[in-house]
Length: 453
Image (cartoon, rainbow, N blue to C red; front, side):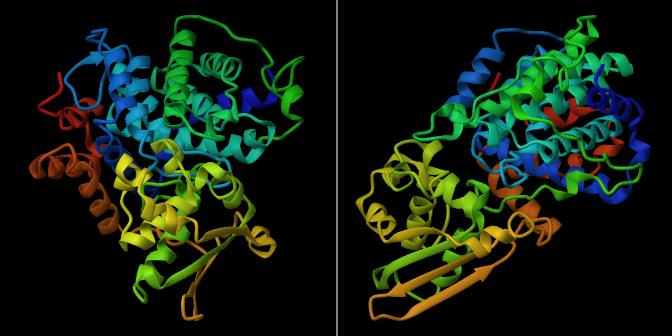
């Protein structure tokens, strides 16, 4: 067993709810609520329907619930279907700079917890553990820099959390890690060019594979002995790296460093969109002659450089298209994910506004990233005046966090697409007292929609 696997396995085996201070427990519940809101809002999306139909082919009383239904299926299939719901609208929390979305692991945590009859305390501990492993791996090696997708972190962290919930010993957790690392090196092509449905589904596949790795390990399956530092192992592909120190008992835990989104869009658009709304109060769309977004390299590269970002053809491309999103926002004086519908994708007025927008990498801002999420927005009016707005941290960043009231308001707005008000209240109450819960089943029962099985 290599040193990284041993460290993670030892850490996970010793990890308990009693390690967690109340502030971290509360933060976990906030993130669970936010994640469920994103899932509920996506309940009718086409990829969600595809994933749900696959999961519902199997009934398994000892398995895990498919969100929005009363049906239990195999835990790995539930993790996939629920993971697609969580991720598809791109509203869940993130580690910026190629770190992806650690809340994707909630799909695996809830599925494994339900299958294992784990209580709320154990489920919370597993979620915090998943974030810790996820963030540590990202801080150790950025898979994006090697042409690989960040869902690698999802798969490994999900496997660790699921193995913990299934009650595996230290060696069993190590086998789950090996069985997650070896087959889960996904390609970054998922997030390049004209984006497909898979962009919003790849992380769910990582969650599914993480749960499956833990189930295999629970059944006695073994994996390669040295998956990080052995011959033809991960470090031969991406280079040597060291896992940073994992949080000591009592923290601080890396869960609290993940940034929550206010808008249902790619994270690096959050600041430009907020600044656009700020300046839009001072002018009408017909007054705008040109817009310059000064940002750091990652934003330019990820959502502001390819030609598809000015003329997206799919929802998946649109929510990663800064000129398109900002153009629609300035035109409408609001942001909504309705912008990703065909009537906006094909709207000449949105295209005309997007054509006035330039995304410019500013080396000074790149030097501040990722400690800061800086942006400067400059709008030149048709009479030659210039309006400027800047920020270092968009709302929801862990250094500019949403209040509980703001987070609950976001949840209510999203959940209202699927649930009546009284059910929304019940979900909020259940999540905010989740450490007292007997387990996820009673929470997931409150997510059932009348139109679902």
